[in-house]
Length: 75
Image 1: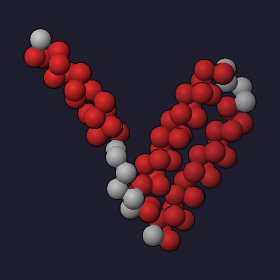
Image 2: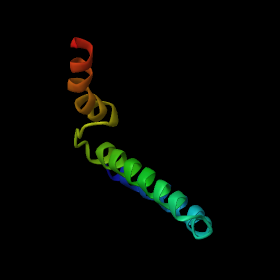
Image 3: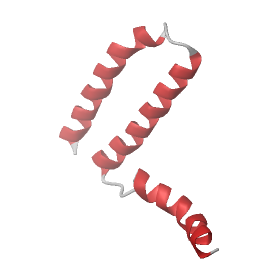
Image 4: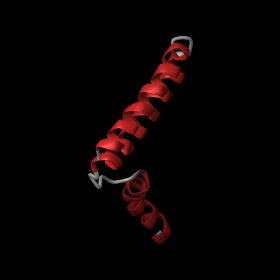
């Protein structure tokens, strides 16, 4: 776990060091999209490092859309 934490820290530090100056020149929607993607990757990174077994994006989408799609198919 410590090795994974160090690797994740290095990756995010490198990404932010490279992207922060460029983000200042971007428009607001681009910044919002960037930070949403960073939050999603941070969520998955924390799940990986701490082995939390949180739902992954596929299971979240399946849980949200499974019942409505079955209702559509049955009608």
